[in-house]
Image (cartoon, rainbow over all chains, first blue to last red; front, side, top):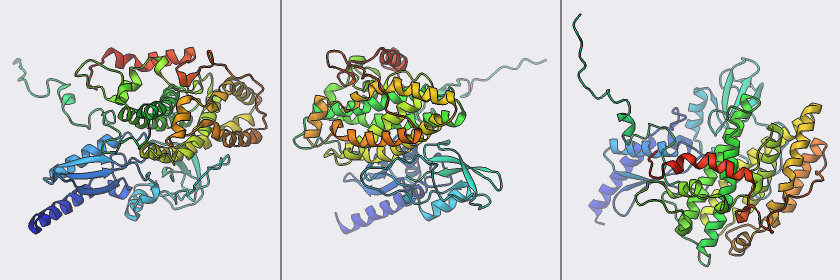
Length: 174
Length: 310
């Protein structure tokens, strides 16, 4: 590739990255896919088409197709043709949610996840109630209780604050 | 009164908008290849048919139990458990999609043929167009739930077993299987802990909840041995370095189940294993009657419209 062509390619890539970074999560629209850690890479394929790599949060995440379409649309709006690929490895972890993503979650009344468990080998069975350092995103109290281990989306559990009595979502650590 | 006549416009057909390619319609039901862009090359020295059949086994376990758990939707004792089973079903359905798609990519010959031009993707052909004898799930996944206590026992046994399989499958030479397992470990851990807690709560709750839990345990336990009976395909997949021999995880699963039984103040049930037919069971496509009813419900719409677009 000539120097000039390479420069053009770099410019396309920069614009593609900017456009892809602006696309929001369909289920948590306060977050961008980049904030969520789902947007893994934006590269240029040999044929000059931009390739966007995304990874699912959970195996059954029903929003993958919508994410793909939103990315293709978002880049098309910026005048860029793109294709979207799935990457499965390494598996998504809530540790990839960016600090600005965590702040956006909290501002929306959703408790951001703590550090994800790190382990290799056999996983111990936990029969006690889940222990998480969760604070109420509305009043800041640590006096909270789980009301449901599963919530409105695969990635969330339901909590209630014992102080301000408000229910809230918590993003589960994985 | 003047008679107002209607000028035809684009809003006359309420369905017209649904027929565009806008993915915002029918949210979440849009079919895409869950392995789009993933390298599905079969590793060197691995028989593609063995790899595909092995993926079908693990995929069918998840597919069938997912369907069973989905039957709890609006039927669970309370809303929280309703949502819990639906979420577990969704995780398992996601695992099933990846595994069936991986099977199809490894050996297209195992994907049922449909009329030329049918838009049905491979994973759906495998899910909806195979009959019971071609479906490879362990029978534990297919039996009826009875009540909530029995459903809890089944999810505990299933997720404890599958979690140990996936813990080892992370080292598969097949990169797709290894990645599916790595993600699955996180999900199954959550399922198992959820079921484990309910197991103890029901056992230590009222006399009635304990009676039901014990009855559920006795109904489910006869299908336990089948989980660890190595099928020829599993043995071949393990020897090729892509699969896990289930016999090898039995001790670890037992330790987990003993921990739950101990916390619940229960013993392992003294019930006879449910035998297969001439030594054949779920992995061979020899199932209980429950599977045929489940498949009939799950597959009827897809089969009625083999050329349908969704």
